[in-house]
Length: 297
Image (tube, rainbow, N blue to C red):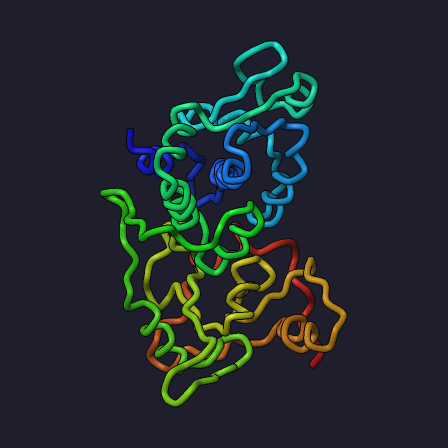
């Protein structure tokens, strides 16, 4: 059995580019726990809080519950659930999962495969990250679920999956003249830019094209905050800052909250600005809460 193909084919709600990373997050969490204890199981009542935090931090802006993937992942052939009454999930109800003593774990065949091939766990985790999250979040997400960051070996996407266009970074950085579109940072060592990255507005994992009108040149800090939903791009290509962001220090005010309402820096004349459709996707699927009022400064 090709476990990578099975993981790549997790059934998810995908209509209209809607983010639904519930199953991938649960599976990443389960892989991290397997790494710690390959014989253990995850009792829902014991892991509900952990899974809730993962969904709140890395899931879509709308409220959700970890009960959904805990039950529905059983249909993908990688996860099983039992209760105090025996095998099988009681459903998606939080009360039912708690009251029945529901516990889940990877199916026996997958557990055996992971024991036979120690590198399979790393390849599966990297595939889940590549298919559902932007690279700026991979390291911290690995840390959050107890996995080592980075693949054990290079992971090729399954046949039929589109591949990234390696030219995008240079095209985007050139279009924005090698400076952060939010703050203007343009550091370099000699002729080599340092701390500047090409961010997808609509994530590549959700059919975001590798094109200039879906990209922003951002410094490392603002790229991370953009992908975390703290920052966004609104009408008139002005910077949005989430009201959910809190930071009382002067650096937090200067580098984040003071950006509210500022126009983007770039792109250069003749280059295509961020397309409205991609900005709208980011605001629906990534940006958290309502934007702050424009900064007086």
